[in-house]
Length: 376
Image (cartoon, rainbow, N blue to C red; front, side, top):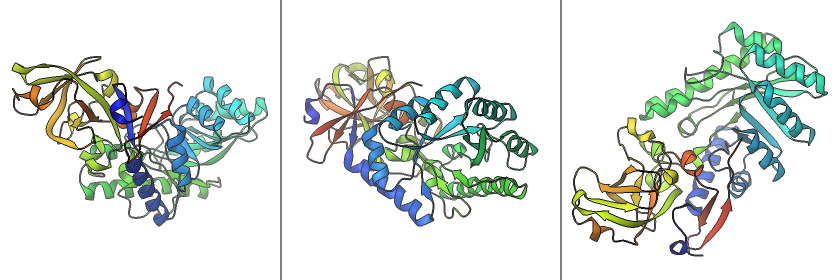
């Protein structure tokens, strides 16, 4: 099926751009001397992750246990569940381990670590547990210098649990847009996580894994000394937020939403398309950045950006395209009814989550349908 034969709205992935992104990130990690464990929450798609592993990835990172179940069933065994574990989810994690999954889980509190240890002991398994470290005041985790780090390590007790290492995510890198600041954030992420690992080792605890990562720091790091593995997710598709941060060009964005012009409000300079926020998502991540792309950048059918035109507003199933800063009263001629366009997303993870499949486009214009999944 050719792209122009697809029903709209639908999510499309440019295979050649995606493969370029995969190869480029893998080459960076190889050069920096660390294993690369991609975060598969961006695609939640078997075909995409197979391409990442084929390029050299060692294991995968997931954000839900549903992802872990789906990818393990598809043959991916080495999995890090990178969200803090709580007691009600331990039964689901246990079932995966009992099936043979090499699952690693996360904690950042004594309460969680104790619950994991007790549940593992009661059920005859030893959970591999990483301690989440906060290196940028962005989200969850323990400060590297905190006494709590060692308290949690003591609460990870054999035979129910073993300390596998430390992990951090420099989510604050998403707020940056200058090369020097991104390099500094990558070094902060690296050095502070390494400090946590050193403190644990000095206290007599094993710490074989030192895991760091985000797409912006992955594209900016100059050294990963002391790190054993790196994680990144959105790099596989990139998006407009990453473009504004400065770690990709618009031509590097592999995911877009295919849409069709269904009407106009000419006096307002509007073209109306069949991709509303149910297709593009409500994510307005570029709103606080230097360039606000509304609900997405408008491109032609080949994926080439049409300068000055954004999806400036959206309802559930209707998107409104207009020219930024002026009213295009000839917009019906610019985009006649039936015109097919592609919309580059603000946040690839959020836009991908609106769909149950991707249509992967080859250079010859043919497409293949790739399933993806949602849920927890």
